[in-house]
Image (cartoon, rainbow, N blue to C red):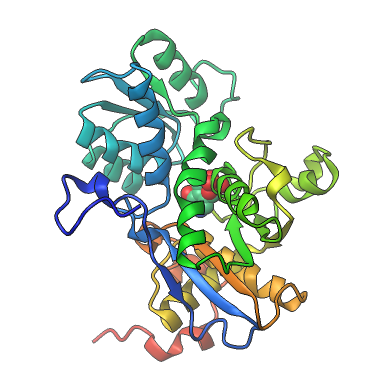
Length: 344
Ligand code: PMP
């Protein structure tokens, strides 16, 4: 945990050890104490800094990486940014294969952090040699001293959270945590945190958050891969159309699904009511917490930790844009009239 006394050797010393922030207003009507683990305080503004650092450091320990070696992944999201950051500090080359749907802004952000970005066609199947999976795989196979992060299928992903996020929550709550609400994408966070906390106290409940349009909840309940569950949705980073081997379904007690609309409004409420400017999945986590509360999961003695994965700055053209909200049919003028834009 705390890796410095005021002066750090690099930004990597600031990865992890994020605060728990008590929510005072947004959960006021609910039974229990509600604490937000604010992962935007990581230097790369998301909890993916934890897995990028851990996976790269494990590869270093195994002697795979030398100065200038390549670290490869298929992502335009938080993981890409975190890998780029780790590579800058440690002197590796960050290679990201992204699909052509990734926004210009995201690609500019990754390139600003030194990443070499391959833009691959979005409309080809995963086994097409031009797909971002195949491009990343080929680059990895062709380069002996490279590491493929492969976050959906890498056990080191959940191990990063088992070794850091889980112990932090246990120590910060002095072992009083009763429930943790976690968004599941690769499943790394929920699996690592869940395993660690259940080893400390098997009564801790691990409450998952899934999206309508994702397979995870149904698969957890039935072990069926029901393709009817899969359809497009807006929330990014949460839910999946495949079963990631990085997810340990056994440590998850239950999943709750949230809608794109409710999650978007909740993220904006978090900003307006608590001053927490977070990403879309943070809204999903707080929305799911409200739904779990309505179903009677908590009482006045509950200590509920909600993991808020990333910062709002990555969603300016989405949930924080009134135009985007209007296009989705989500805009509610009553909610936003207080600070409506005045053009003089
Ligand atoms: N929220 C955001 C914004 C993410 O980028 C991710 C990662 N896909 C998640 C939640 C889910 O975390 P995990 O991959 O550890 O399940």
